[in-house]
Length: 207
Image 1 (cartoon, rainbow, N blue to C red):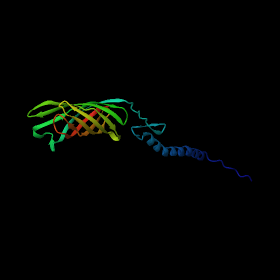
Image 2: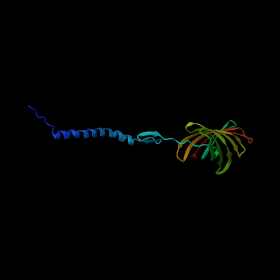
Image 3: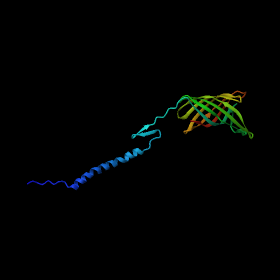
Image 4: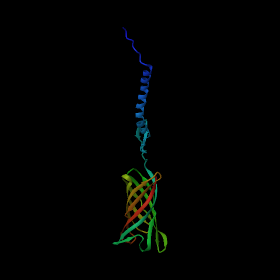
């Protein structure tokens, strides 16, 4: 006797066919969050995302020589002369200078600075421009915005000498860089004894 072979029920076939897209959708859903998060993940400002990969942006190298100007003010803090320390703001007298200059940068490590510093002196209820300092110098540039400047000094008051300057950039923006500096003016001449000072300078350079 021949046994009759039963064909699968049509509902069973339909259910099995539906399982394939359901499984596919589950797998796709499990992969989707990772892909989405990768697409919206932030990248550093100096990087760019392309075709699913992150690439470092190529920073344009500055061209030299480069000329930048700067403005600042300078406060004499202390002066040593003839064995005596004289602070600023003593005996109702104070001085403040306004250095303005141009830096010519020849490389990442070296430059030359041209600076003029008029000084205003206030004493006894009156004030006047008491001196003009001309102090060009060489710039030795290091990493992290630190610069050593060796300046010559020629004053209209008759004094002359040299001034080592220790300069540090402490904040940067697109338009300007802000710096702070300590200087040690060494002065001779004009029938006065040798003097050594300590000055504080604050200012900004134009980019």
